[in-house]
Length: 304
Image (tube, one colour):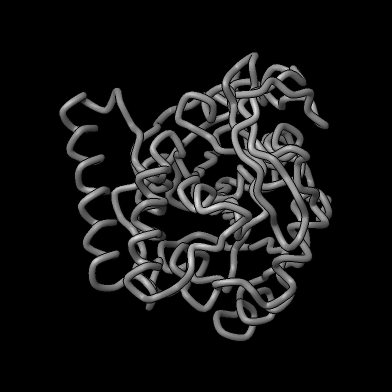
């Protein structure tokens, strides 16, 4: 594999030297998937921008309509939250149509959401009466230490600068608050991609995500404007560099099953997730490498 000079320095180690993995395209924009020579982080080159993410969310190609099918995931995340906080101001970053926040409110939290899709914000307000604000967290200019809980589901591998975004979370979280993340864990994303490929073939859909069939085996890179392919190891490095202390890291044990996840593909996803969860239990939680992981963290130097 060829060595390349990247457009952007690595967010973890600042190296611009990387190994080229594959070319792909997002919405007609050519990019490459590269692995950093310094720390091994797999990322897009060049990195997508916040404008890319905003444009994607505001085109209507968003799956907030599937919020209800993700209720098992939302409840699992809330169970983790409640081990650290049981009340207070609750911010969900990338809140979609507000279903997670509505369920948080039913558990006694005071919810507020931030979302890049203006249409999703409108639906959250109309359907649940949620205070959902359009834009990024930094654009809201929240006061210091405003929230007791911050959740961000599958948001940390998106633009823009994750270090700056995580630092902003630290600023607006109270000293004994908790940050709970759910992230794709891409060490085994080729297995997850293989399940997707079987699903597409079974439905007669072409494997046309990105410029190559191989890109389909690398997760969601041809569909979303993701910046990084995080593993549990690189996610820990990212959080530590941004000043967070991890209190819990484990497989996401539930999944969502929208209308496209049926039959053979649903069985494959379920078997894969069950295998990952079983291996995590056998290793007493020391090895988490499922398709998605959940992390609970607190700012370094703050009390429990």
